[in-house]
Length: 399
Image (tube, rainbow, N blue to C red; front, side, top):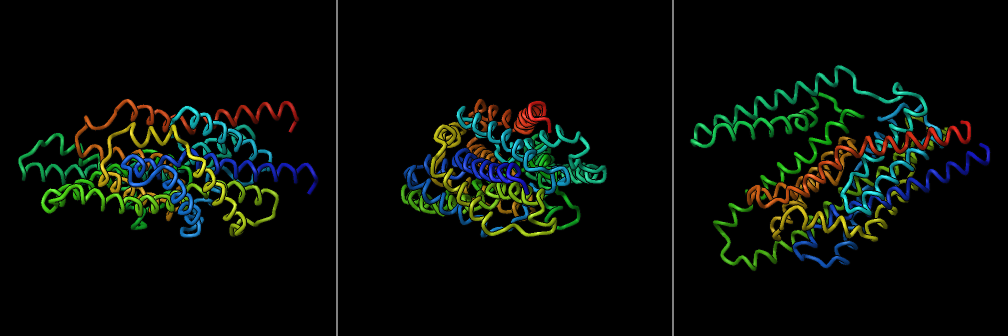
Protein backbone atom coordinates (compact mmCIF):
# COMPACT_ATOMS: atom_id res chain seq x y z
CA UNK A 1 0.00 0.00 0.00
CA UNK A 2 1.57 3.31 -1.11
CA UNK A 3 1.80 6.46 1.01
CA UNK A 4 -0.91 8.39 -0.87
CA UNK A 5 -3.41 5.53 -0.47
CA UNK A 6 -2.62 5.33 3.24
CA UNK A 7 -3.19 9.08 3.64
CA UNK A 8 -6.50 8.88 1.75
CA UNK A 9 -7.63 5.97 3.95
CA UNK A 10 -6.79 7.90 7.13
CA UNK A 11 -8.58 11.01 5.80
CA UNK A 12 -11.60 8.89 4.86
CA UNK A 13 -11.82 7.38 8.35
CA UNK A 14 -11.44 10.80 10.00
CA UNK A 15 -14.11 12.30 7.72
CA UNK A 16 -16.45 9.37 8.49
CA UNK A 17 -15.99 10.05 12.20
CA UNK A 18 -16.58 13.77 11.62
CA UNK A 19 -19.79 12.84 9.77
CA UNK A 20 -20.91 10.91 12.84
CA UNK A 21 -20.05 13.95 14.97
CA UNK A 22 -22.19 16.12 12.66
CA UNK A 23 -24.89 13.46 12.81
CA UNK A 24 -24.95 13.63 16.60
CA UNK A 25 -24.99 17.42 16.51
CA UNK A 26 -27.99 17.46 14.16
CA UNK A 27 -29.81 14.52 15.72
CA UNK A 28 -29.36 15.79 19.27
CA UNK A 29 -32.73 17.39 18.65
CA UNK A 30 -34.38 14.00 18.22
CA UNK A 31 -33.61 12.64 21.66
CA UNK A 32 -33.51 15.71 23.88
CA UNK A 33 -36.01 18.13 22.32
CA UNK A 34 -39.06 16.67 24.04
CA UNK A 35 -37.41 16.18 27.43
CA UNK A 36 -36.22 19.82 27.36
CA UNK A 37 -39.53 21.16 26.02
CA UNK A 38 -41.45 19.64 28.96
CA UNK A 39 -38.72 20.75 31.43
CA UNK A 40 -38.16 17.21 32.63
CA UNK A 41 -34.43 17.96 32.44
CA UNK A 42 -32.25 20.99 31.94
CA UNK A 43 -30.61 21.21 28.48
CA UNK A 44 -27.16 20.36 29.87
CA UNK A 45 -28.32 17.28 31.83
CA UNK A 46 -30.45 16.09 28.90
CA UNK A 47 -27.51 16.26 26.52
CA UNK A 48 -25.12 14.46 28.91
CA UNK A 49 -27.55 11.59 29.63
CA UNK A 50 -28.41 11.24 25.93
CA UNK A 51 -24.71 11.13 25.00
CA UNK A 52 -23.99 8.30 27.43
CA UNK A 53 -26.98 6.28 26.21
CA UNK A 54 -26.12 6.99 22.57
CA UNK A 55 -22.58 5.69 23.12
CA UNK A 56 -23.99 2.43 24.49
CA UNK A 57 -26.43 1.97 21.59
CA UNK A 58 -24.14 0.25 19.06
CA UNK A 59 -23.07 -2.31 21.66
CA UNK A 60 -26.70 -3.15 22.45
CA UNK A 61 -27.90 -3.59 18.87
CA UNK A 62 -26.42 -5.54 15.93
CA UNK A 63 -24.21 -4.01 13.22
CA UNK A 64 -26.63 -4.91 10.40
CA UNK A 65 -27.14 -1.24 9.49
CA UNK A 66 -23.39 -0.73 8.98
CA UNK A 67 -23.28 -3.65 6.55
CA UNK A 68 -26.24 -2.21 4.61
CA UNK A 69 -24.36 1.08 4.26
CA UNK A 70 -21.13 -0.72 3.32
CA UNK A 71 -22.52 -3.20 0.80
CA UNK A 72 -26.24 -2.64 0.13
CA UNK A 73 -26.38 0.70 -1.71
CA UNK A 74 -23.56 0.71 -4.28
CA UNK A 75 -21.63 -2.26 -5.68
CA UNK A 76 -18.65 -2.59 -3.27
CA UNK A 77 -16.40 -3.65 -6.17
CA UNK A 78 -16.28 -0.02 -7.32
CA UNK A 79 -15.25 1.31 -3.91
CA UNK A 80 -11.93 3.06 -3.61
CA UNK A 81 -10.75 5.16 -0.67
CA UNK A 82 -11.01 8.30 -2.86
CA UNK A 83 -14.60 7.55 -3.93
CA UNK A 84 -15.67 6.96 -0.32
CA UNK A 85 -13.86 10.12 0.79
CA UNK A 86 -15.77 12.17 -1.79
CA UNK A 87 -19.07 10.51 -0.82
CA UNK A 88 -18.45 11.60 2.76
CA UNK A 89 -17.69 15.17 1.62
CA UNK A 90 -21.11 15.46 -0.03
CA UNK A 91 -22.87 14.01 2.99
CA UNK A 92 -21.04 16.16 5.57
CA UNK A 93 -21.55 19.33 3.52
CA UNK A 94 -25.30 18.80 3.28
CA UNK A 95 -25.79 17.88 6.96
CA UNK A 96 -23.80 20.88 8.22
CA UNK A 97 -25.53 23.24 5.80
CA UNK A 98 -28.93 22.10 7.12
CA UNK A 99 -27.80 22.16 10.77
CA UNK A 100 -26.70 25.79 10.44
CA UNK A 101 -30.12 26.58 8.96
CA UNK A 102 -31.92 24.81 11.81
CA UNK A 103 -33.37 22.14 9.52
CA UNK A 104 -33.69 18.66 11.11
CA UNK A 105 -32.30 16.75 8.13
CA UNK A 106 -31.54 13.02 7.92
CA UNK A 107 -27.82 12.30 8.26
CA UNK A 108 -28.40 8.67 7.24
CA UNK A 109 -30.08 9.66 4.00
CA UNK A 110 -27.43 12.30 3.29
CA UNK A 111 -24.85 9.50 3.47
CA UNK A 112 -26.94 7.32 1.15
CA UNK A 113 -27.14 10.21 -1.33
CA UNK A 114 -23.40 10.83 -1.06
CA UNK A 115 -22.60 7.20 -1.83
CA UNK A 116 -24.99 7.12 -4.78
CA UNK A 117 -23.71 10.41 -6.25
CA UNK A 118 -20.03 9.47 -6.05
CA UNK A 119 -20.76 5.93 -7.25
CA UNK A 120 -22.71 7.13 -10.30
CA UNK A 121 -19.96 9.63 -11.16
CA UNK A 122 -17.36 6.87 -11.00
CA UNK A 123 -19.15 3.99 -12.70
CA UNK A 124 -22.52 5.10 -14.03
CA UNK A 125 -26.04 4.21 -12.89
CA UNK A 126 -25.35 0.48 -13.18
CA UNK A 127 -23.21 0.43 -10.00
CA UNK A 128 -26.18 1.35 -7.80
CA UNK A 129 -27.99 -1.64 -6.31
CA UNK A 130 -31.37 -0.66 -7.74
CA UNK A 131 -34.42 -2.63 -6.54
CA UNK A 132 -35.35 -5.65 -8.64
CA UNK A 133 -38.78 -5.93 -10.25
CA UNK A 134 -39.67 -8.69 -7.77
CA UNK A 135 -38.91 -6.36 -4.83
CA UNK A 136 -40.90 -3.48 -6.32
CA UNK A 137 -43.92 -5.65 -7.15
CA UNK A 138 -43.76 -7.25 -3.70
CA UNK A 139 -43.67 -3.85 -2.04
CA UNK A 140 -46.64 -2.62 -4.10
CA UNK A 141 -48.56 -5.81 -3.31
CA UNK A 142 -48.16 -5.44 0.45
CA UNK A 143 -48.97 -1.73 0.37
CA UNK A 144 -52.20 -2.39 -1.57
CA UNK A 145 -53.21 -5.36 0.60
CA UNK A 146 -52.53 -3.37 3.75
CA UNK A 147 -54.60 -0.45 2.46
CA UNK A 148 -57.53 -2.74 1.55
CA UNK A 149 -57.50 -4.61 4.88
CA UNK A 150 -57.08 -1.42 6.93
CA UNK A 151 -59.79 0.40 5.00
CA UNK A 152 -62.20 -2.54 5.38
CA UNK A 153 -61.62 -2.79 9.13
CA UNK A 154 -62.18 0.93 9.70
CA UNK A 155 -65.19 0.97 7.36
CA UNK A 156 -66.76 -1.79 9.46
CA UNK A 157 -66.02 0.04 12.70
CA UNK A 158 -67.42 3.31 11.36
CA UNK A 159 -70.67 1.58 10.39
CA UNK A 160 -70.94 -0.13 13.79
CA UNK A 161 -70.31 3.07 15.77
CA UNK A 162 -72.14 5.25 13.22
CA UNK A 163 -69.23 7.60 12.70
CA UNK A 164 -67.73 9.32 9.62
CA UNK A 165 -67.47 6.50 7.06
CA UNK A 166 -65.32 8.36 4.53
CA UNK A 167 -62.82 9.72 7.08
CA UNK A 168 -62.42 6.42 8.92
CA UNK A 169 -62.01 4.45 5.69
CA UNK A 170 -59.27 6.79 4.41
CA UNK A 171 -57.45 6.71 7.75
CA UNK A 172 -57.73 2.93 7.90
CA UNK A 173 -56.39 2.51 4.36
CA UNK A 174 -53.40 4.79 5.06
CA UNK A 175 -52.62 3.10 8.37
CA UNK A 176 -52.94 -0.37 6.85
CA UNK A 177 -50.59 0.49 3.99
CA UNK A 178 -47.96 1.84 6.41
CA UNK A 179 -48.20 -1.16 8.75
CA UNK A 180 -48.25 -3.83 6.05
CA UNK A 181 -44.53 -3.64 5.23
CA UNK A 182 -43.26 -3.78 8.86
CA UNK A 183 -45.63 -6.69 9.55
CA UNK A 184 -44.33 -8.52 6.45
CA UNK A 185 -40.77 -7.94 7.72
CA UNK A 186 -41.61 -9.28 11.19
CA UNK A 187 -43.29 -12.39 9.78
CA UNK A 188 -40.43 -12.95 7.33
CA UNK A 189 -42.78 -13.43 4.37
CA UNK A 190 -40.97 -10.88 2.21
CA UNK A 191 -37.44 -9.46 2.33
CA UNK A 192 -37.01 -5.70 2.17
CA UNK A 193 -33.36 -4.66 2.17
CA UNK A 194 -30.82 -2.39 0.56
CA UNK A 195 -31.89 0.70 -1.35
CA UNK A 196 -35.58 -0.23 -1.65
CA UNK A 197 -35.90 -0.50 2.14
CA UNK A 198 -34.23 2.90 2.60
CA UNK A 199 -36.43 4.64 0.03
CA UNK A 200 -39.59 2.94 1.29
CA UNK A 201 -38.96 3.81 4.92
CA UNK A 202 -38.50 7.50 4.09
CA UNK A 203 -42.30 7.44 4.02
CA UNK A 204 -43.03 4.51 6.31
CA UNK A 205 -40.81 5.42 9.29
CA UNK A 206 -42.36 8.85 10.08
CA UNK A 207 -45.85 7.47 9.42
CA UNK A 208 -45.14 4.49 11.66
CA UNK A 209 -43.80 6.82 14.35
CA UNK A 210 -46.92 8.98 14.02
CA UNK A 211 -49.27 5.97 14.26
CA UNK A 212 -47.50 4.41 17.27
CA UNK A 213 -47.25 7.74 19.10
CA UNK A 214 -50.86 8.76 18.35
CA UNK A 215 -52.18 5.37 19.50
CA UNK A 216 -50.09 5.29 22.67
CA UNK A 217 -50.98 8.89 23.55
CA UNK A 218 -54.70 8.23 23.03
CA UNK A 219 -54.51 5.21 25.35
CA UNK A 220 -52.68 7.26 27.98
CA UNK A 221 -55.24 10.06 27.65
CA UNK A 222 -58.16 7.67 28.20
CA UNK A 223 -56.51 6.08 31.25
CA UNK A 224 -55.63 9.46 32.77
CA UNK A 225 -59.13 10.85 32.19
CA UNK A 226 -60.64 8.04 34.27
CA UNK A 227 -58.08 7.57 37.04
CA UNK A 228 -56.05 10.72 37.55
CA UNK A 229 -57.28 13.06 40.28
CA UNK A 230 -54.08 15.10 40.75
CA UNK A 231 -52.73 16.25 37.34
CA UNK A 232 -49.72 18.01 38.88
CA UNK A 233 -48.55 14.79 40.54
CA UNK A 234 -48.96 12.89 37.26
CA UNK A 235 -46.87 15.53 35.47
CA UNK A 236 -44.01 14.86 37.88
CA UNK A 237 -44.25 11.10 37.34
CA UNK A 238 -44.33 11.46 33.58
CA UNK A 239 -41.35 13.79 33.66
CA UNK A 240 -39.38 11.02 35.42
CA UNK A 241 -40.64 8.39 32.99
CA UNK A 242 -39.77 10.70 30.12
CA UNK A 243 -36.12 10.72 31.20
CA UNK A 244 -36.02 6.92 30.90
CA UNK A 245 -37.85 7.02 27.55
CA UNK A 246 -35.44 9.65 26.25
CA UNK A 247 -32.48 7.48 27.29
CA UNK A 248 -34.00 4.53 25.45
CA UNK A 249 -34.51 6.69 22.36
CA UNK A 250 -30.90 7.90 22.56
CA UNK A 251 -29.61 4.31 22.73
CA UNK A 252 -31.78 3.47 19.70
CA UNK A 253 -30.37 6.48 17.85
CA UNK A 254 -26.84 5.35 18.64
CA UNK A 255 -27.68 1.83 17.56
CA UNK A 256 -28.86 3.05 14.14
CA UNK A 257 -27.09 6.31 13.28
CA UNK A 258 -23.69 5.54 14.81
CA UNK A 259 -23.46 2.76 12.26
CA UNK A 260 -23.23 5.28 9.42
CA UNK A 261 -19.52 5.84 10.09
CA UNK A 262 -19.05 2.14 10.79
CA UNK A 263 -20.47 1.36 7.35
CA UNK A 264 -18.14 3.79 5.57
CA UNK A 265 -15.06 2.67 7.47
CA UNK A 266 -16.09 -0.94 6.81
CA UNK A 267 -16.35 -0.10 3.08
CA UNK A 268 -12.92 1.61 3.13
CA UNK A 269 -11.33 -1.45 4.76
CA UNK A 270 -13.10 -3.67 2.22
CA UNK A 271 -11.83 -1.58 -0.69
CA UNK A 272 -8.18 -2.10 0.29
CA UNK A 273 -8.58 -5.75 1.27
CA UNK A 274 -8.02 -5.30 5.01
CA UNK A 275 -11.38 -7.03 5.64
CA UNK A 276 -12.98 -9.73 3.51
CA UNK A 277 -16.53 -9.42 2.14
CA UNK A 278 -17.90 -11.68 4.85
CA UNK A 279 -15.78 -10.18 7.64
CA UNK A 280 -17.03 -8.60 10.86
CA UNK A 281 -16.65 -4.97 11.83
CA UNK A 282 -13.62 -4.49 14.12
CA UNK A 283 -14.27 -3.44 17.72
CA UNK A 284 -12.12 -0.29 17.33
CA UNK A 285 -14.41 0.88 14.52
CA UNK A 286 -17.49 0.46 16.73
CA UNK A 287 -15.80 2.30 19.61
CA UNK A 288 -14.64 5.28 17.54
CA UNK A 289 -17.98 5.61 15.72
CA UNK A 290 -19.91 5.53 19.00
CA UNK A 291 -17.58 8.09 20.57
CA UNK A 292 -17.90 10.45 17.58
CA UNK A 293 -21.70 10.55 17.61
CA UNK A 294 -21.74 10.94 21.40
CA UNK A 295 -19.38 13.93 21.24
CA UNK A 296 -21.63 15.41 18.54
CA UNK A 297 -24.58 15.08 20.88
CA UNK A 298 -22.62 16.83 23.62
CA UNK A 299 -22.02 19.82 21.30
CA UNK A 300 -25.80 20.23 20.89
CA UNK A 301 -27.58 21.52 17.80
CA UNK A 302 -29.63 24.16 19.57
CA UNK A 303 -31.42 25.57 16.51
CA UNK A 304 -32.70 22.15 15.57
CA UNK A 305 -33.59 21.34 19.20
CA UNK A 306 -35.77 24.44 19.33
CA UNK A 307 -37.55 23.57 16.09
CA UNK A 308 -38.19 19.97 17.14
CA UNK A 309 -39.12 20.74 20.76
CA UNK A 310 -41.43 23.72 20.27
CA UNK A 311 -41.74 24.31 16.51
CA UNK A 312 -44.02 21.36 15.73
CA UNK A 313 -46.40 21.34 18.69
CA UNK A 314 -46.64 22.21 22.40
CA UNK A 315 -45.84 19.17 24.53
CA UNK A 316 -47.01 18.17 28.00
CA UNK A 317 -44.96 15.63 30.03
CA UNK A 318 -47.15 12.64 29.21
CA UNK A 319 -46.98 13.54 25.50
CA UNK A 320 -43.21 13.92 25.65
CA UNK A 321 -42.98 10.49 27.30
CA UNK A 322 -45.19 8.98 24.61
CA UNK A 323 -43.20 10.56 21.75
CA UNK A 324 -39.81 9.47 23.15
CA UNK A 325 -40.90 5.91 23.95
CA UNK A 326 -42.60 5.50 20.55
CA UNK A 327 -39.50 6.82 18.79
CA UNK A 328 -37.28 4.35 20.63
CA UNK A 329 -39.55 1.42 19.76
CA UNK A 330 -39.69 2.27 16.03
CA UNK A 331 -35.92 2.89 15.80
CA UNK A 332 -35.10 -0.36 17.59
CA UNK A 333 -37.35 -2.24 15.17
CA UNK A 334 -35.68 -0.72 12.10
CA UNK A 335 -32.17 -1.31 13.45
CA UNK A 336 -32.86 -4.99 14.06
CA UNK A 337 -33.63 -5.37 10.33
CA UNK A 338 -30.54 -3.44 9.20
CA UNK A 339 -32.47 -0.48 7.76
CA UNK A 340 -30.54 2.85 8.10
CA UNK A 341 -33.69 4.80 8.84
CA UNK A 342 -33.75 8.50 9.61
CA UNK A 343 -34.03 9.14 13.35
CA UNK A 344 -35.10 12.66 12.41
CA UNK A 345 -38.04 11.32 10.42
CA UNK A 346 -39.11 9.00 13.23
CA UNK A 347 -38.83 11.68 15.92
CA UNK A 348 -40.74 14.20 13.80
CA UNK A 349 -43.47 11.62 13.21
CA UNK A 350 -43.82 10.75 16.90
CA UNK A 351 -44.04 14.43 17.91
CA UNK A 352 -46.67 15.05 15.21
CA UNK A 353 -48.58 11.97 16.34
CA UNK A 354 -48.81 12.99 19.96
CA UNK A 355 -49.72 16.56 18.91
CA UNK A 356 -52.53 15.34 16.65
CA UNK A 357 -54.32 13.82 19.64
CA UNK A 358 -55.35 17.41 20.41
CA UNK A 359 -56.49 17.98 16.82
CA UNK A 360 -54.85 19.17 13.60
CA UNK A 361 -54.79 22.74 14.90
CA UNK A 362 -52.30 21.73 17.62
CA UNK A 363 -49.62 21.02 15.00
CA UNK A 364 -47.64 23.81 13.32
CA UNK A 365 -48.16 22.85 9.67
CA UNK A 366 -45.60 25.39 8.45
CA UNK A 367 -42.81 23.66 10.38
CA UNK A 368 -44.07 20.27 9.26
CA UNK A 369 -43.96 21.44 5.63
CA UNK A 370 -40.32 22.57 6.01
CA UNK A 371 -39.36 19.20 7.50
CA UNK A 372 -41.18 17.28 4.75
CA UNK A 373 -39.33 19.22 2.05
CA UNK A 374 -36.01 18.40 3.74
CA UNK A 375 -36.96 14.70 3.76
CA UNK A 376 -37.64 14.68 0.02
CA UNK A 377 -34.56 16.59 -1.16
CA UNK A 378 -31.85 15.17 1.13
CA UNK A 379 -30.79 12.11 -0.91
CA UNK A 380 -30.79 13.87 -4.31
CA UNK A 381 -29.07 17.02 -2.97
CA UNK A 382 -26.31 15.11 -1.18
CA UNK A 383 -25.98 12.95 -4.30
CA UNK A 384 -25.59 15.94 -6.61
CA UNK A 385 -22.94 17.49 -4.33
CA UNK A 386 -20.90 14.26 -4.26
CA UNK A 387 -21.38 13.76 -8.02
CA UNK A 388 -20.02 17.24 -8.79
CA UNK A 389 -17.12 16.93 -6.34
CA UNK A 390 -16.10 13.62 -7.94
CA UNK A 391 -16.25 15.05 -11.47
CA UNK A 392 -14.21 18.12 -10.50
CA UNK A 393 -11.65 16.03 -8.61
CA UNK A 394 -11.30 13.58 -11.51
CA UNK A 395 -10.65 16.46 -13.93
CA UNK A 396 -8.07 18.06 -11.64
CA UNK A 397 -6.24 14.90 -10.49
CA UNK A 398 -6.97 12.67 -13.50
CA UNK A 399 -8.24 9.54 -11.73
